[in-house]
Length: 113
Image 1 (cartoon, rainbow, N blue to C red):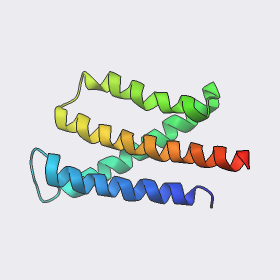
Image 2: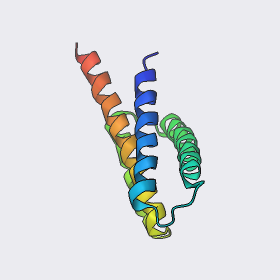
Image 3: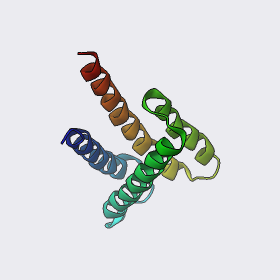
Image 4: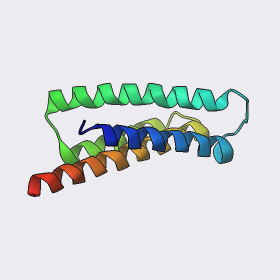
């Protein structure tokens, strides 16, 4: 139950990002594009969750150190992606960073009390 607000926040922000990307940044407006964006963000979220949980178990990092991983991923993928794909992925990474940071702040606040 403690993770549910963060998961719901992430899902709401991802949905809003998909709609905003479709309205303002998508290079081609097709009828099925919004569904493809939502499916792509679901795939990214699943891969991201698996990657982070495995990385935490292998390395043992928790907290602020985990916020460096998405930045490294963006630097690596910047070289080989189309501009629109990079912008979409950058928005998803920004959302995951914001939700992760909120979760860290919440944990530190509860731990301090």
